[in-house]
Amino acid sequence: MAIESSVDEVYSNSPVVLITGCSTGLGRALVLEAASQRLRVIATARKISTIENLRAPNITVLTLDVTASTSQLEEFANKALKVFGQVDILINNAGYPIAGALEEVSSDQTLAIFKTNFFGSLNVANVFLPHFRARRSGTIINISSMMPYVSTPGSGSYTATKAALDSITQVWAHELAPLKIKVMGVSLGFTRTELLGSNLSTVENTVKNPIPDYANVRAFHEQVRALHGHEPNDVQKVAKRILDVVLTHDELPVMFPLGNDAVTSADEYLNQRRSEFEKWKELGMGVDADKDV
Image (cartoon, rainbow, N blue to C red; front, side):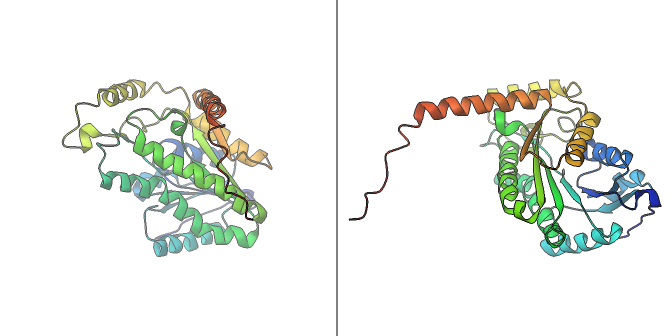
């Protein structure tokens, strides 16, 4: 794995950010925004040919498959740390969607999307945590989704990966705070990228026999297709907001809904959960074990 970097003195004291999944969309936008803010950037993708044109005095490009083995990821981390001598911010962005009813999406497909969207973020972070712990410094940003707030028909497998990612984000926030390592999850709203376009796998092109009964899932697919190209959030503004929050706040939110649609969905979700909780909380109480005599 070749490593090439040429960093002018103007960048020598700036934070180093490593970003996964930089070939298109938000990952690429984050690279460009970070570079414009004079950060030192390590941009990664499975195929380095897709990010070669990102090379710049403060941008190094490296090959990274987030589904690689632990030993391969450890080797990658060692090489990445040699580029600038440190990594200050890790942004776990690599991921992809799949649309289909839970019954339609095969177990192999479900395992594959978890391997990238969930275990990819978990495993990449884990190989950089020894570096962060040794320095008592570092920031992990997990790019999640607003989908766990809305749980629409046909989004189950993708939503499950993001809900799992949100869970470890919250656990990490508690585990790593004493070590002065910050963690933030971004619950991203619909953003104008290829996520809903060429990156979207649907049962129509991945399953031989879609189940006719799931008309509501087909309707969801049509809504998604219609939304592509008209998503409400601008990817460059999203990238800028993420980096601005990370770089200008000493304290970060554990979960950060980003985009008007995400903020609205999060607010509605929390209100619904509170209403449901109040309705059923009495039945959830009163099952204490008898006191020992």
